[in-house]
Image 1 (spheres, rainbow, N blue to C red):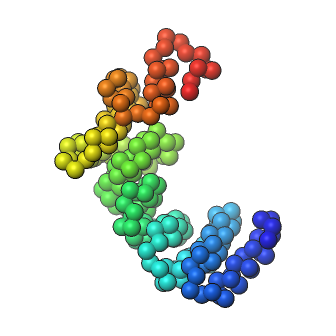
Image 2 (cartoon, rainbow, N blue to C red):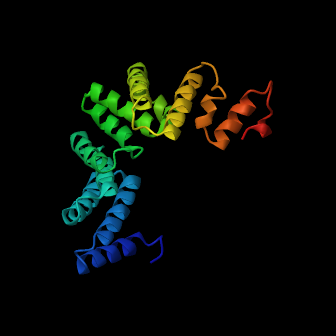
Image 3 (tube, helix red, strand yellow):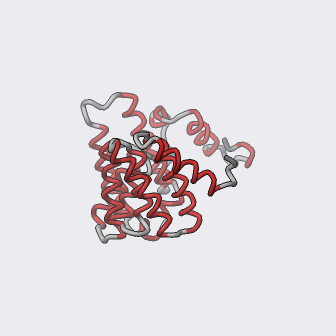
Length: 220
Protein backbone atom coordinates (compact mmCIF):
# COMPACT_ATOMS: atom_id res chain seq x y z
CA UNK A 1 0.00 0.00 0.00
CA UNK A 2 1.53 3.36 -0.97
CA UNK A 3 2.53 5.61 1.94
CA UNK A 4 0.34 8.32 0.43
CA UNK A 5 -2.76 6.10 0.68
CA UNK A 6 -3.44 6.73 4.38
CA UNK A 7 -7.01 5.41 4.25
CA UNK A 8 -5.92 2.25 2.44
CA UNK A 9 -3.04 1.59 4.82
CA UNK A 10 -5.16 2.07 7.94
CA UNK A 11 -7.93 -0.07 6.43
CA UNK A 12 -5.50 -2.94 5.75
CA UNK A 13 -3.98 -2.73 9.23
CA UNK A 14 -7.46 -2.71 10.77
CA UNK A 15 -8.36 -5.79 8.71
CA UNK A 16 -5.14 -7.60 9.70
CA UNK A 17 -5.63 -6.84 13.38
CA UNK A 18 -9.14 -8.32 13.27
CA UNK A 19 -8.10 -11.42 11.33
CA UNK A 20 -5.29 -12.11 13.84
CA UNK A 21 -6.61 -10.59 17.08
CA UNK A 22 -3.85 -12.26 19.13
CA UNK A 23 -1.13 -10.43 17.19
CA UNK A 24 -0.10 -7.23 18.96
CA UNK A 25 2.09 -6.10 16.05
CA UNK A 26 -0.85 -5.26 13.77
CA UNK A 27 -2.67 -3.39 16.54
CA UNK A 28 0.49 -1.46 17.38
CA UNK A 29 1.11 -0.49 13.76
CA UNK A 30 -2.51 0.58 13.39
CA UNK A 31 -2.25 2.64 16.57
CA UNK A 32 0.96 4.28 15.36
CA UNK A 33 -0.58 5.25 12.02
CA UNK A 34 -3.66 6.68 13.75
CA UNK A 35 -1.41 8.54 16.19
CA UNK A 36 0.60 9.95 13.30
CA UNK A 37 -2.54 11.31 11.67
CA UNK A 38 -3.70 12.69 15.02
CA UNK A 39 -0.39 14.51 15.38
CA UNK A 40 -0.99 16.27 12.07
CA UNK A 41 -4.64 17.12 12.67
CA UNK A 42 -4.49 17.69 16.46
CA UNK A 43 -7.86 15.94 16.56
CA UNK A 44 -8.83 14.59 20.03
CA UNK A 45 -11.12 12.00 18.43
CA UNK A 46 -8.25 10.69 16.31
CA UNK A 47 -6.06 10.45 19.41
CA UNK A 48 -8.88 8.47 21.05
CA UNK A 49 -8.93 5.97 18.18
CA UNK A 50 -5.16 5.48 18.46
CA UNK A 51 -5.41 4.98 22.22
CA UNK A 52 -8.12 2.34 21.71
CA UNK A 53 -5.78 0.27 19.54
CA UNK A 54 -2.90 0.60 21.99
CA UNK A 55 -5.13 -0.39 24.90
CA UNK A 56 -6.29 -3.48 23.02
CA UNK A 57 -2.65 -4.43 22.38
CA UNK A 58 -1.73 -3.97 26.06
CA UNK A 59 -4.68 -6.19 27.02
CA UNK A 60 -2.84 -8.98 25.19
CA UNK A 61 0.66 -8.12 26.42
CA UNK A 62 0.98 -5.43 29.12
CA UNK A 63 4.80 -5.56 29.14
CA UNK A 64 5.25 -3.29 26.11
CA UNK A 65 7.19 -0.22 27.17
CA UNK A 66 6.94 1.56 23.76
CA UNK A 67 3.16 1.21 23.74
CA UNK A 68 2.78 2.61 27.25
CA UNK A 69 5.05 5.47 26.13
CA UNK A 70 2.95 6.15 23.03
CA UNK A 71 -0.20 6.11 25.14
CA UNK A 72 1.35 8.59 27.54
CA UNK A 73 2.17 11.09 24.79
CA UNK A 74 -1.33 10.63 23.33
CA UNK A 75 -2.94 11.35 26.71
CA UNK A 76 -0.80 14.41 27.42
CA UNK A 77 -2.90 17.01 25.51
CA UNK A 78 -6.19 15.57 26.83
CA UNK A 79 -5.55 14.24 30.35
CA UNK A 80 -2.12 14.79 31.94
CA UNK A 81 -3.12 12.67 34.96
CA UNK A 82 -3.60 9.63 32.70
CA UNK A 83 -0.45 10.57 30.82
CA UNK A 84 1.52 10.38 34.07
CA UNK A 85 0.14 6.91 34.78
CA UNK A 86 1.34 5.64 31.40
CA UNK A 87 4.74 7.33 31.66
CA UNK A 88 5.20 5.63 35.02
CA UNK A 89 4.15 2.25 33.61
CA UNK A 90 6.64 2.62 30.77
CA UNK A 91 9.42 3.62 33.18
CA UNK A 92 8.62 0.65 35.43
CA UNK A 93 9.52 -1.53 32.44
CA UNK A 94 12.55 0.49 31.27
CA UNK A 95 13.71 2.96 33.95
CA UNK A 96 16.61 4.45 31.97
CA UNK A 97 14.69 5.14 28.75
CA UNK A 98 15.40 8.68 27.59
CA UNK A 99 12.52 11.12 26.90
CA UNK A 100 10.15 9.34 29.31
CA UNK A 101 11.26 11.20 32.45
CA UNK A 102 10.90 14.41 30.42
CA UNK A 103 7.35 13.46 29.44
CA UNK A 104 6.60 12.56 33.05
CA UNK A 105 7.86 16.00 34.11
CA UNK A 106 5.64 17.76 31.56
CA UNK A 107 2.58 15.82 32.72
CA UNK A 108 3.37 16.68 36.35
CA UNK A 109 3.83 20.36 35.58
CA UNK A 110 0.45 20.32 33.85
CA UNK A 111 -1.18 18.97 37.02
CA UNK A 112 0.64 21.32 39.38
CA UNK A 113 3.04 18.74 40.81
CA UNK A 114 6.19 20.86 40.61
CA UNK A 115 8.31 18.82 43.09
CA UNK A 116 7.57 15.63 41.12
CA UNK A 117 8.40 17.40 37.87
CA UNK A 118 11.73 18.61 39.27
CA UNK A 119 12.74 15.08 40.26
CA UNK A 120 11.67 13.70 36.86
CA UNK A 121 13.73 16.36 35.05
CA UNK A 122 16.78 15.55 37.16
CA UNK A 123 16.38 11.88 36.26
CA UNK A 124 16.00 12.77 32.56
CA UNK A 125 19.33 14.58 32.72
CA UNK A 126 20.89 11.57 34.48
CA UNK A 127 19.73 9.00 31.90
CA UNK A 128 20.23 11.36 28.93
CA UNK A 129 23.04 13.76 29.92
CA UNK A 130 22.90 15.83 26.74
CA UNK A 131 19.31 16.80 27.51
CA UNK A 132 20.71 19.70 29.51
CA UNK A 133 21.95 21.16 26.19
CA UNK A 134 18.65 20.52 24.38
CA UNK A 135 16.45 23.41 23.16
CA UNK A 136 13.66 21.76 25.16
CA UNK A 137 15.57 22.72 28.31
CA UNK A 138 14.95 26.41 27.50
CA UNK A 139 11.13 26.14 27.66
CA UNK A 140 9.92 28.88 30.04
CA UNK A 141 8.21 26.41 32.40
CA UNK A 142 11.39 24.33 32.59
CA UNK A 143 13.71 27.32 32.88
CA UNK A 144 11.78 28.39 35.97
CA UNK A 145 12.87 25.25 37.84
CA UNK A 146 16.46 25.00 36.58
CA UNK A 147 18.08 25.75 39.97
CA UNK A 148 16.05 23.07 41.77
CA UNK A 149 16.64 20.51 39.00
CA UNK A 150 20.38 21.19 38.98
CA UNK A 151 20.54 20.77 42.76
CA UNK A 152 18.77 17.40 42.56
CA UNK A 153 20.92 16.35 39.62
CA UNK A 154 24.05 17.22 41.59
CA UNK A 155 22.87 14.98 44.43
CA UNK A 156 22.03 12.15 42.00
CA UNK A 157 25.45 12.39 40.35
CA UNK A 158 27.22 12.31 43.71
CA UNK A 159 25.17 9.32 44.83
CA UNK A 160 25.67 7.44 41.57
CA UNK A 161 29.39 8.20 41.41
CA UNK A 162 29.99 6.87 44.91
CA UNK A 163 27.81 3.78 44.61
CA UNK A 164 29.93 0.64 45.19
CA UNK A 165 28.26 -1.22 42.32
CA UNK A 166 28.99 1.52 39.78
CA UNK A 167 31.56 0.27 37.23
CA UNK A 168 34.66 2.35 36.64
CA UNK A 169 33.84 3.16 33.03
CA UNK A 170 30.48 4.57 34.07
CA UNK A 171 32.10 6.70 36.77
CA UNK A 172 34.30 8.21 34.05
CA UNK A 173 31.15 8.99 32.02
CA UNK A 174 29.57 10.68 35.03
CA UNK A 175 32.70 12.70 35.72
CA UNK A 176 32.68 13.99 32.14
CA UNK A 177 28.99 14.85 32.32
CA UNK A 178 29.56 16.69 35.60
CA UNK A 179 32.31 18.71 33.92
CA UNK A 180 30.13 19.36 30.87
CA UNK A 181 27.41 20.88 33.09
CA UNK A 182 30.01 23.14 34.70
CA UNK A 183 31.24 24.30 31.28
CA UNK A 184 27.72 24.67 29.86
CA UNK A 185 26.83 26.99 32.73
CA UNK A 186 29.85 29.20 31.99
CA UNK A 187 32.56 27.50 34.06
CA UNK A 188 35.87 26.00 33.04
CA UNK A 189 36.18 23.40 30.28
CA UNK A 190 36.64 19.72 31.21
CA UNK A 191 40.16 18.78 32.21
CA UNK A 192 42.12 16.03 30.52
CA UNK A 193 41.20 13.64 33.32
CA UNK A 194 37.52 14.53 33.04
CA UNK A 195 37.61 14.03 29.26
CA UNK A 196 38.49 10.37 29.85
CA UNK A 197 34.73 9.78 29.99
CA UNK A 198 34.05 11.62 26.72
CA UNK A 199 33.84 10.06 23.27
CA UNK A 200 36.08 10.97 20.33
CA UNK A 201 33.74 13.68 19.00
CA UNK A 202 33.41 15.32 22.39
CA UNK A 203 37.17 15.33 22.91
CA UNK A 204 37.63 16.79 19.41
CA UNK A 205 35.09 19.50 20.20
CA UNK A 206 36.88 20.65 23.36
CA UNK A 207 40.26 20.46 21.62
CA UNK A 208 38.89 22.86 18.98
CA UNK A 209 37.29 25.07 21.63
CA UNK A 210 40.72 25.47 23.24
CA UNK A 211 42.19 27.01 20.06
CA UNK A 212 42.69 30.82 20.13
CA UNK A 213 40.20 31.53 17.32
CA UNK A 214 38.97 28.38 15.58
CA UNK A 215 37.56 28.77 12.09
CA UNK A 216 34.03 27.56 11.40
CA UNK A 217 35.39 24.70 9.28
CA UNK A 218 37.49 23.38 12.17
CA UNK A 219 34.60 22.51 14.48
CA UNK A 220 33.83 18.78 14.57
